[in-house]
Length: 152
Image (cartoon, rainbow, N blue to C red; front, top):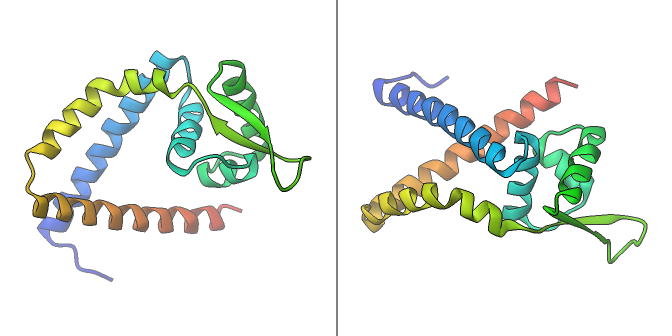
C-alpha cells in the first residue's frame, strides 16, 4: 500500500471537490437542457465514443439495461438521439447522437472558462495535467469496474 503524503492527500481532496462541482454542473446543465443526469451521461458517452448499441451504452454508463430502454425512449422523443439499424444485423439498432448544438450552447460559458485556463498553461504544464488526469481516469475506471464486479 502506498503511504499517503501531504501532496497525495491534497490532490485527492482537490479531485473530490472537483467531482462535487462537476456533479452540480452536470445537474444544472441537464436541468437547463430538460434532461436528467442519466440522459446526459448517455449523450456524453455518445459524443465521446460515437454510435453504439444500447447494450454497450448500458455497460459503459452502468445503467441497467431495462432502465436504458426508458432513457433511450426519452432521448429519442426529445430529438437527442436517432436509432439506426445495425449494418451487420438488421434486428439490432445502433444509437446515434443528434442535437448537440443545444448542448454545445449550454456548455459554452463553461468551455470558454476552461479554454482561458488552458491558454495560460505552458505546453509542459498542459502535458503534466493531461498525463495526471488520464492516469486518474484510468485508475477510477478500474476501481469502478472492480466495484461493479463485487456488486453482482
